[in-house]
Image: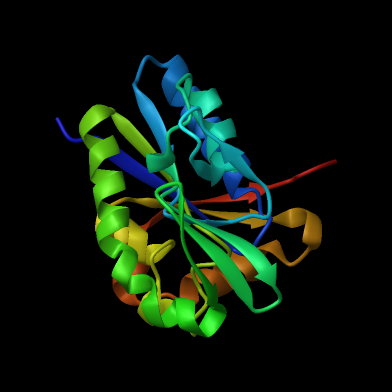
Length: 201
């Protein structure tokens, strides 16, 4: 049976998506489900090297640990390792794919959708639940037409979405409302709940 899915997106970078995703992985694991994390595209300077010598994002390694399973490069098929302010080394399925400037990557990244689909579908065949994580914000209207990591990925996986906002930075209600209002109708319909993160006091 194909896995059920749920996706965590944030109003901005560092809103707490990775930790919330890990929390969901641990909760489902403790409830007896076979669960795996998934982030189609991650950006990080430091990668994790698997036993096979392949590279993946460290956040997905932490999430895999929360899920009680070993890290697997299928959990992060695309990793961007910045090499300058405008370029990155592109890692696909754990191996170096190319070194591209941002503009070049945006022009070519939809070529990588089959790799993303293959990785995701493979996990979905093996697990009960796949918890997906977005990147940055889904409301970046300049990136929407080539989105492969936020609402574009949610559509690929037909996943309901939770939106995380960071109260610690202030303006959390504007963050949440503004993000939702910048989505199109189909994307809005996927938002099933909001989470106010980093609440203190």
